Amino acid sequence: MEAHPQDPTKRITHLALDEHSMVRRNADIESERSIAITDLLADNYFAPVGATGPFRLSLGIKDNRLVLDINDTARQQTEQLVLPLNALRSHVKDYFTICESYYAALKRANPAQIEAIDMGRRGVHNEAAELLRERLADRVEMDFATARRLFTLICVLHIKG
Figure 1 (cartoon, rainbow, N blue to C red):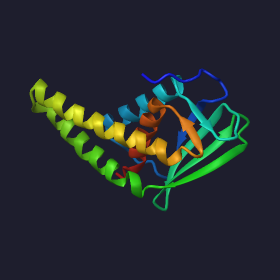
Figure 2: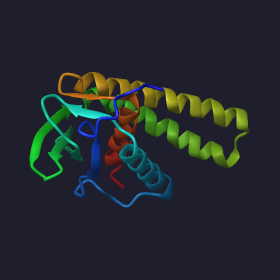
Figure 3: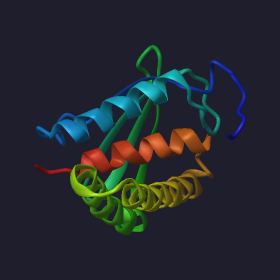
């Protein structure tokens, strides 16, 4: 587990997903979304360069770009980061494919098969989290767990119904 400072000015205290991107999702996806948000808010390290928090973060997708609206607790915009999603597209697609296999396997596969699929799922998730950290490294410092949870939420935003 990666250690990070417990500095209250370098964390996200509120997170919202762009309501324009939201659609009704199945119970598995809603559970993943809820867990990712709850876990992220409970423990994260998020430090935009030159900004002092804590932060309110809004995630959305617009014109095939990830939009991170970063505000301070007084809701004054600190920064808006826009990241082209091209680099993450294959990871999102692979993650969706593996998740479909995983949820199907839970209903009919043996434990060894489920574990193998889950290892693949975690591997894709980890690679995507590292890529997200790399792409934002010059603008935001974050720990690995925060990047993983943000990738989960990026995937949720990709679901169009």
